[in-house]
Image (tube, rainbow, N blue to C red; front, top):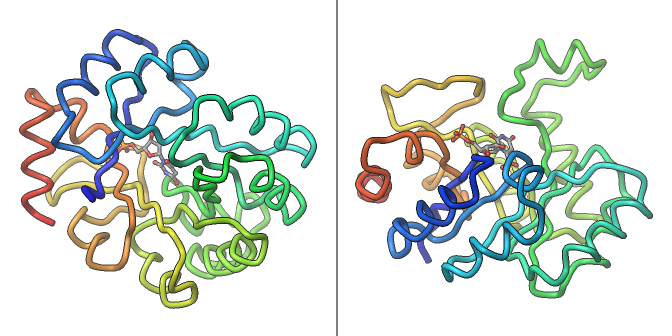
Length: 223
Ligand SMILES: O=C(O)c1cc(=O)[nH]c(=O)n1[C@@H]1O[C@H](COP(=O)(O)O)[C@@H](O)[C@H]1O
């Protein structure tokens, strides 16, 4: 399976459908997140899903267990391949999120956002370094019955070692020499794949390229 899921972060449903259609055969799936969902809701997701590509619904659910479970049930008709929740929501929330999801949907827990570094964690009262915090939350996700986690490429090797049959989603990827933007814990797609990533989430390096399909092919050629 092609491990690249393209993050289509746009409020424009037609642009998302056109981009997904142009990348069919070049990427393994499409990730739709908060920007797209806030603008277009489930009906917009269904339009992109109609292109035939697997859908990764990245809503990063994080609330009390009952609310998250209810939201998960409300999303079930979309039959997403992958859905995200925040590991920081705690064990009961994670267990109930998984129990409420369709059986074929992988529920993965976001550990430490790739836009955060040690200083950012310190400012929210987390004294642990990012790698240590990822390890802790990965163990919580595993013990709560989830399918896997989201972490940066810097942590995925250790996480994979601690959870050999886990499913590892890695964003914060940049081909060497490209702008990291708001991402702080960045590696190349090749490094992430070699370290054990199951899915490589790549947004702007593909979507903002002059020729997105060519950019996706170029990245696939480095893996
Ligand atoms: O859950 C995610 O997908 C996610 C988690 C994380 O820690 N960092 C992260 O960047 N993401 C998502 O991955 C995508 C990265 O996009 P680019 O930085 O444009 O490649 C965005 O859609 C983010 O919402």
